[in-house]
Image (cartoon, rainbow, N blue to C red; front, top):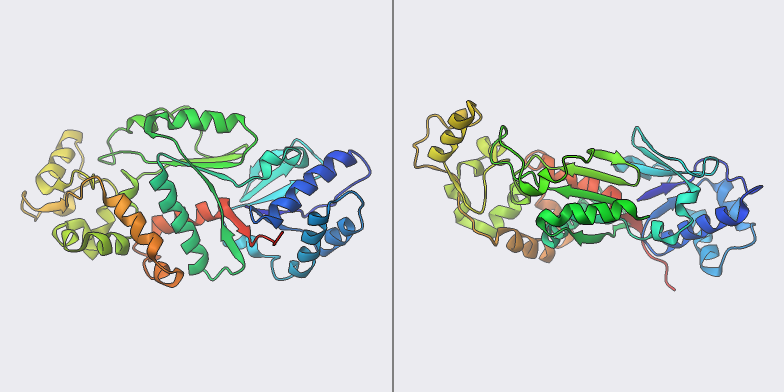
Length: 338
């Protein structure tokens, strides 16, 4: 995460707790787990303060040279953390800023890598690739993405979520809706989160994707590169219909006849754009169970330059949005050498 200290650091009281929190933040920056920024006046103040270890002093020296060039780096991300040294218990999200009182950084568990909770490890790896590609695509140099990916295990994801919510870790949780139609019901995993508020709350972010599964969200160029001519049989892979990729089950496939039946069952007209197609025409080919694994393997072999070429702002707009969000949670600097 981008972590900023914009206010005054008052060391006249609760000094031990504040120094411990600062030490944890400086170490997290130096280890590349998060990216810390503070004005030059604060860097100079802390450089003259007794009580910091040798590694933290090295980090402060590095921060001195980054103050000007990194001052506006937070604008490239969805949110940043602002450490409050007046209200030590503060935990509040306001207009893209997560205000966090210094007491929340007293335990070093809070400054470890942010956690990305996904339904399975492959989902997490795909999101991580997207986040790293977002940095390269936007030419954000000197930073990296580092996340602790934790798989939820399908419908037990809520159990992992609850454990993280009770912990001191910062985390984001992104899960599939498993909807087969915009008027359809949520899948079992998503239904178990019905009591959880979406968005930012305390130290976490939660979102149920509108898309059926992550396969519906992957960059179109990646799916085409992996599946090849199979995509040519699917209506949703034509440029004028790619907006309809949201709901078809890529594992099982979908025909025009099945799509129209979904509409009739719900009294809807979501698939009305298919009216002139034959009922046997294929909306989405049947890719089987290995599409995501194949796509992740393919993405991991791409160079940063080639990765950027596979992610289109227009065609893959929702993927780009999620990639920016994940990057905002995982962004950190380059770790200092020990």
